[in-house]
Length: 333
Picture (cartoon, rainbow, N blue to C red):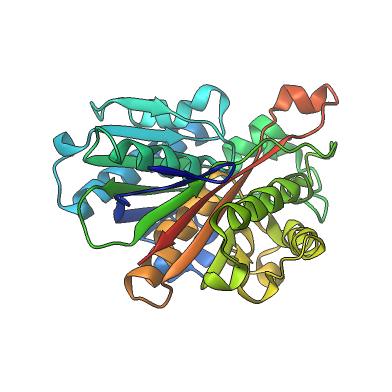
């Protein structure tokens, strides 16, 4: 590994993203990316007695699926990085408690998938031959924890986003013919004082811009180096803010930039307001849609920057601001 500039790591032996899997809920199955997911669910419970148990089942099945698709034995996987939105990451730890592999629980809010891929990639430069990375989220469990129980029927403001129900999983390997993770740019915590828990896009956009510009500064690259620059889940409002911040710093990203929260739902027909969010937003859009675009060589260079709001229900109720984080990985063929 080689450190570039202030925050970026360049891999001497870039790990391959060997295989991906994705499972999504019923609303996501009605969206524009439905055909790219491996499995879609007919209801939010999936035969379980609670939404939390359903989310654990989703991440369990997504990890089993990616192992099966990869063609490698689970015993050849050296470690697992996984996380979710629920307190103490119960979805991933309960869902994967039977996997019988070294487990690292990761929390980066909605940036968790790329954070896991970044840590997994570092491991492949050292001791690990294969690393499994997975995240999950669930609309109903997240609403109950962070906002209001669904039974109350609270009205959602236009700036709010819809937590994606689903899970995405990937296996990184020292072997394979790409796509490769060539660089990672870990993000810094950026807090602009925004306190509205129903406007996550505005809270996270400054962190996205900070990591984006740092990546370009460290690597000497410009926006047009990439076929696509994808943020994790800023949604429609956050996406526009991100474009404006980047432009004010001298970077025009409008032509090749999009957001997972914008891509996963149809704004006009699905009433998701500002778009998608949650750990599974970036994870399923990448593992389903973007990974297939790379496999088919429709995209050859992607900068994937997952964003997260580092808050919980207690901090919001106590009037704290919402710190943002954004982690970036460069994926190339």
